[in-house]
Length: 196
Image 1 (spheres, rainbow, N blue to C red):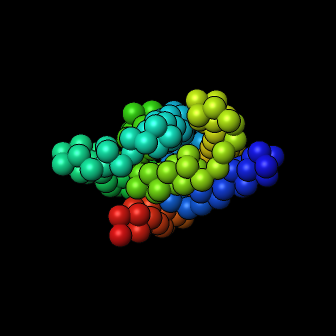
Image 2 (image 1 turned 45 degrees about the vertical axis):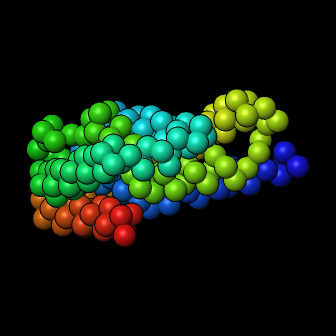
């Protein structure tokens, strides 16, 4: 039974963390605009933020956090503002050949994106409560968290590299602007979908 749950959990983790959303599209867009190596701190922040959400979900705190009259809306508002800033930074980034350094996303921005992503709350609640991987609750949470961390590193690196694959095209000013705007609009659309 645990082996079946393990396989199901891994598949669900890949599906839930790898599907397009604000974090994954943000990573890909940032890598296209700024090069993947400069976005590793953004990726690290997103992963840490999602792990915080997972820990809260595993402890049963997610509902309590979001139900707070001030805390839930504050986190969501800060996240939306950051995603708007990220979309603007991506849309207005100069071609890669210009050596753009202004607006490169940071660890703290990624952390905010991970914690404030509405998709993360739904996904982490499903992963934390939908599968049993160990008999002890603490061991179960640890095993799930370890698997989730591994999956997120693989998935997020794939999104970074996918965005980075556009780097050659991003050196052409016209293509760079067009691709950045498409990524920024896709990021905003994923944010809007997450809140609707």
